[in-house]
Length: 128
Image (tube, rainbow, N blue to C red; front, side):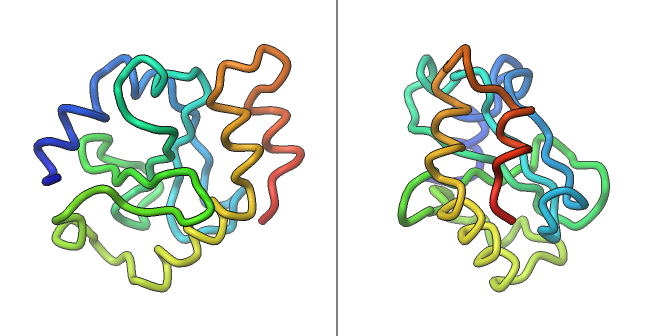
């Protein structure tokens, strides 16, 4: 899948509206993450995922966020994502994957429309 296909699949305004920002200062990762906290993936034809910023800036260009699956083996379902990275290294991506693996159950609960679990709960429980 290339970037244009990903944009059509992941970046509609409804999906981005349903994502909470996890700032790098809180996660201690080198870039901001965007977490689906409204279950939009359930209606959009793709699996649960996070998005991460393609650079280390404080503000993101939301049209250039990179998706990553939430699983035991997180993957980036974009064939040309490396051409989009601006200062993000392979080691940075490994850190994000480790974060996803460490928090997988909590991330899945967050994005599965659980009315008893929200971003505030996730922030209290997340493993850095």
